[in-house]
Image 1 (tube, rainbow, N blue to C red):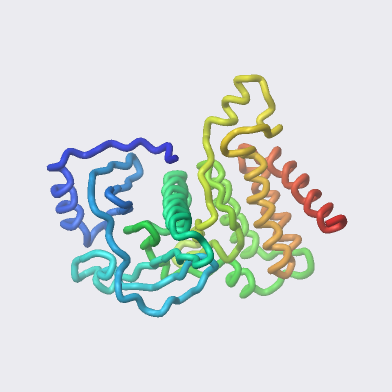
Image 2: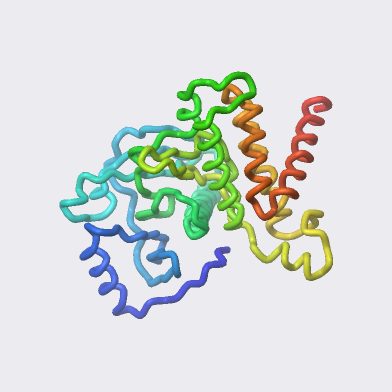
Length: 311
């Protein structure tokens, strides 16, 4: 369940707030998340709710620009999601539509799609509040999310592969800068209690305009509780020792998240080992839990090697 506070709006406030939003639409598009029977208007300070009917999936849909394991990605005009002013009619949005699986029971399938869509939205909102740049959510339904389109973005993977090599085990200044910026985004994610679940260089976009990175694809992400470690400290227990709890060991989850990124670097890039060490160094130096997380990464790596040796 979400830990964010919900404050119901009086019935007369909703039409007024919607009118104000669309009046200032040329300047700033409101961040809106639609769920069944509720309309959520998200801001940095609070999330407010009032009874409303969810938007249906825009129809007809063009051919998808990308096929994923559980979803399809579409590039649509903003006006197809909700009416907008002429000045924004040429703007584009990314629509992520989760697909129904025929092998699942229809009731279970609907529940899983709904839960995973909500979980992805919750993680993106938490990440933005934590200072991580990620797509802005414009609207959402039970099985889709419409979000901003980063037109000038290039994946960190493509950017690193386009740079000239600095030699075996040597990183260039551009490579070090990109890896440092990406690792700082990971640190902010973890500080916001968000586990991405699929940290690879393909899931970070590097903006040409300012060199900042944008985290994308939160489909496997989850938001952990921020109270678990504090309860353990009060009880005199070591928070890195694991043990029960609905969200598991947060430190272990951070370590696995970081290890996935390091493995992606080692297997997908030349000088991958040096890049992985750079990421680990920045995380260790700049993260509040850096030392313990990096120590945990070594344990995760050792378990992986044991499985490879003994099955």
